[in-house]
Image (cartoon, rainbow, N blue to C red; front, side):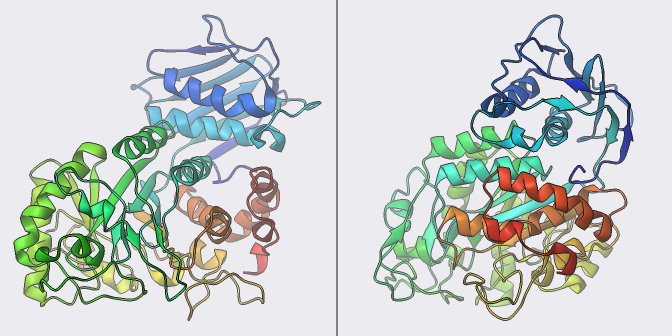
Length: 467
């Protein structure tokens, strides 16, 4: 009952039991995966799992392995031990998560559990993802989410073999990333006086060290972080700090309302944007940087020129721009959010496309129409089944879910909205033959794992079978 479903899973008659004498043997390059396995299993099992020359758990990195691609792995469990092999560090990290799921559910508990037989069932698994982009976008601009919340969410993504965290760092309502030479971006742009008239100041910013730590934490788990710096619209927090960068120099406070502000960067702000992107490239070493680009009230020619210039800056430095709207450069990744028709033209041009249609990937919509659902974006219900059947035209890189946080103030609310819908996305993008019926069957057991991880009880009681 692994989620997402492995490509091939063959049961063997005899399994292997981890105990205080079990050790881990690693080949060069597999050390990070071994440390990850030990760190994840130690809290509940208490087992030391030392690194040793002779170990029952063998973790091997072998770039010559055929057929596993950039993220696949092969896992064998028998009465003699455990063998995990992959051609990349990401593949090993995904295999570690499968080992966690093969163990009793109690292995996911954050504290020591007694009287549990830590037995892995005998199995022969060969596993390769169907699509390379399996993502989640988290908006930390509308409501700031502390680092410990992000680290835990990265861990939850890793358990489900998601591999891209799209971090929405700036918007009209807040700017969360420090930029040397522009200190007012965070000291002014990182805070608003209230939210929709509630009278309560809100804000928060990350340090560079915290962001770099998040990047490292994610990379160890096979996840890359794609930062988003909104432009040329959704810029009011930045313009509250530096009004001269806007189309109007009238001072404006950080926005305290939701919706689309008419504030935007003027063409003369491009040098400022380049300075911001230079810092972004230093902090986030991943291949993609998101430029936003949607819901901007600038004339279309100015809007397009701004995005092309910002995108060129990234491309000239070996990075790939991504945007919600076309940038005019086929080398950029397009994320259709209105509907699947938005993907047709970019795909015809050979452009990278990641599906993000709001009707099946926006998790700020309620997941049911039952009474008692927490506040969410009005007008639509997005169920786990909707997410599972996200449109995936031929040629797309993959898809991602989005969670805008206008209504999300706490970790519990965030996780309630994300799960189990995000699990549905993970399964449909990884599995070679996705099946809604098979997924709902596996979710009956997987929900006990979510419970062990303290995902809110309301999520666990969601009737996925009838979404």
